[in-house]
Image: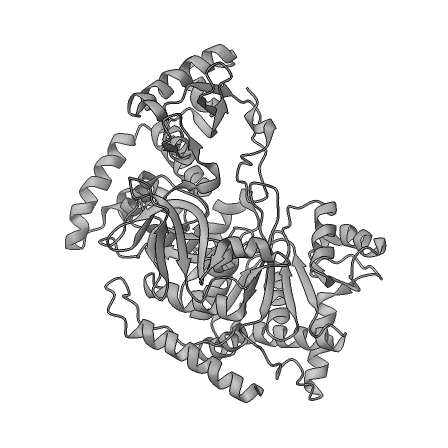
Length: 600
């Protein structure tokens, strides 16, 4: 098939997806404004046509400097120049890795690769040198684009001769190095080529169904799989998600999560660019509050741990000031007064709202389960606070709660996104089984792992490995991961995530991990909880520097209250108090099958 025919088919498919969304009769599809995009290059070109003078990126390019704004037109020029230079340097059709802190240079590099140069390979910045070497080797990476921090690591990897790396490109920093090519130098080279009429990147032909991104997952089992994503996968997500949660051209997304993950990569990076919004890069976790006040963003994507920390910090400050009762009253009364157009929160709780920069509109939690009460607290403050659900294998979106309060279900991870299907297989007597998703966003498969791919993709359905159920309106509820399930002596399933959630509501618990241990005496399974206490909360009750037995006694008093509400087969029978952090993966999720996390 010639490219013109292929392009006609691709555009026709994108148009049919957009038409289906914009003509939907689903009551949850409120925003019928999806424009058809055949691939990310097409998305970028049309966004520049629509929003060219809007701010696309906001960043501090040096410490103690104010944020600088870059427009869509300026970013587009940089991307076209960079892509042209990469092709001129012999990288057409190659695998090119990008790694480093969230920044404008990372974003433009990703787009310059995926929009016409080759296959982009986002690498996890938290990985060690040996793991990075292995992934670069496995992915057959020809060039790496990195922030200055990673220069020495990749010089050593290239020098080892164990990989296909031919070129090293430094995205930032002022340290000169003959072995490295400067990002800014490539842009200057590309701009000169464009001015002389070079159109190799501008006219690059893209097949939206081929692998264009190779993304390595960071699971809790330690085995990284390469997820193969296409333009079609990603563009489908971009078109379907903003139909139930509105994104405006004037929104500013606050980027704090690692950009190499699909959650931030699709939802916090590509989504705003599709909708004409801006992305403001946080300088780092310790600068969150300061940067929020400087940027005054409207959209904040985070993981539960981030929002839980903000919630706990706010509540601790409220308690210290003796205002807990007042805040509760204001939130309760405000629910009534808001219906007649009077928002008491803005006047009486302005110090809390100020923490978020003063203009915050939407908080989205993803990546793991969050306490519905925390979402409700933020909703009561006046934000739109919702949770969503996705996996890297779905690029990543699967479900999202609507942004209208009347439709939100805080206990659910969200309504299946329009254009997708969901089903539950192998249900138990409670209707709980494995969640399966189907849609154009389901990955092409795992890289060089046909057997693993066949285990999870069957007849177009992606078997997520998550256990849960759906209600009659296709809201998804997750109970836990299939591989984590504890089988009790009576054959019943016990989901450790459920027990960990209950433990997380105890103020003295910082984090926990639950597992089933073999009871050698009777051959039964004993449910054990390893608990890392929140020592600030503990010491507030039993005094400074308490001994381990006193801490354990306090925790048992609370665990007994949890057990009292549980059936016999779910009760926690043993607890282990941990003083050190659990071993985690780079996504900061506890590794469940590492023995050091199960030490009693």
